[in-house]
Length: 268
Image: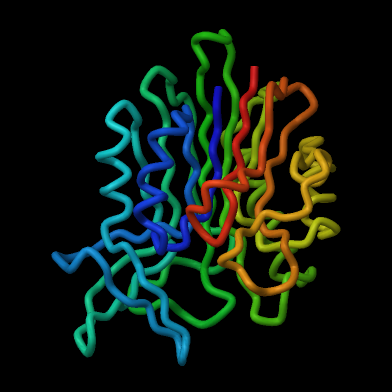
């Protein structure tokens, strides 16, 4: 089973991104920061926050659906708000997307908010609502179930340090996984955690499930691309239980398809 985790940056680099996703031929795609249009609109619009602006690929979710015809897809919005074409605003959503190859069977599922709740009338104040998605999948080739989860962790303007909100986020993620996973299932948890490697969140996940992070344990020190110019190069993580057979793991340096690097895991 090949698993890809990527923060898509709203499709800012949509041409290389849309070329990369089908080429990598993953069985599972866990994608964060995915826009979806709520009404007909131009294919590219602008997100505004004060003086900050970002181009957003408005139909990124549906574009990926078209690229992966042998995968089932889920879109899980965290919030809806405006994207702009000049002075005109269009309604859009922003959240997680999951794609699973149709040769695997979904035998359990849960999604929910790990911070805040869905915001229907605007993107909300920071730290904004964040969600997670968990699947229990039967792998017919391996002859066993495996539980998989992704999260987009809250972003705090004060930084990536531990806070009460992040501790609560970890507890909610653990409860979500517990609602799906059966005892003894191999477990993979990934995503953009927006955390430093020494965060208490990882200790909580290790205590709850025995999870070990592959990014730091494999010696990677950077999960961002050249498009990210700030210090603090950790954001994305891939964690596994000891019973997961890791055939290969990479923090993909090239091609650059976002301001985050893709995490690519192959398990037996």
